[in-house]
Image (cartoon, rainbow, N blue to C red; front, top):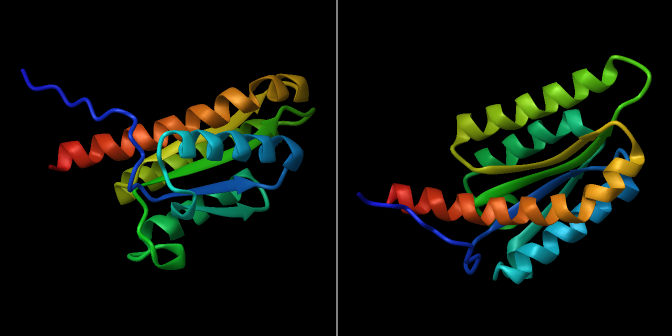
Length: 157
């Protein structure tokens, strides 16, 4: 039996983060935690690009543009992408639409382009729940991006 165990070495990887400015104070904390984790895993700061969009529904389109660009933003091709945002339940059905459709869009871009995308878009009932999760979820998204980039490289040979 052959096992693919790519590990969490981020050295030489190029990663782009797309983040939503809606609930900006929370999402900036996600971005900070993700960036910190990527650097701790060996991704060079110069190899991390960050793009902001107005809201969670705009994240998939920006991800698609980055994934399809042959040379990537700033002349780079990315090994993985990260989606960060915070969708907090309100009093209307809009929460379900934004949460479900942004997640579906992220998955669609990943499957259509073959570029791994770590989904760090929080979907919570309250702002307090989101605050409790930002540091953990941001770091987790960074780890997932590195692991999946390495996994796909190992599988592709």
